[in-house]
Image (cartoon, rainbow, N blue to C red):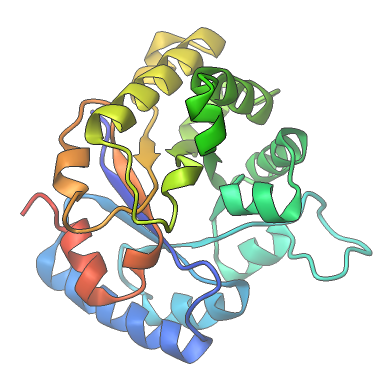
Length: 252
């Protein structure tokens, strides 16, 4: 049975003091409401220490939004997995569409990051998804297949338990547009079948697949009701308790 997994990607929002205050209130609400899902929040690098302190003792996972594809060295402006681990961060989001779109991260670069994170014992949320042009041209499945095959290249079967896939249709991120629950479920089903072809049906069945793309309180229940939707990667609606709490307590 796949346990639901809901994550909040704060992107470049909330200062360390703002993030810590919000995280503390979130931890308090989680202790009171006791959601059934796993909960993760991903602050900016500079906010991670304060947020970790704010949620200490709770079950909230604090993740990084990205990491370098090198352990150390002359890579100005980068943050390594070892640095994250030293802080106490054991989960990282890789391959987010904004990293692909704005910073030129290729499937190959993302794969090198995935392999490095796994070699350090970290958990990975690997993002995949198509642009509107790719969807309209009928290339949805080709894009997802390529991103999965290259992104997971050389990942061993036993390492797949450390991997969560986040499907994020690029056209639905921050636009207010959302894939219908049926659209999301169909894409997730294809992802699961692709992983089954690469690895095995049992690995595919155990794989947690999140949906990301303008998830909010008003649509989370319908999305989570679908067979292949196991969670959500939430952007803007994860930035306040008023919006995020109804999402993580969707089944109450």
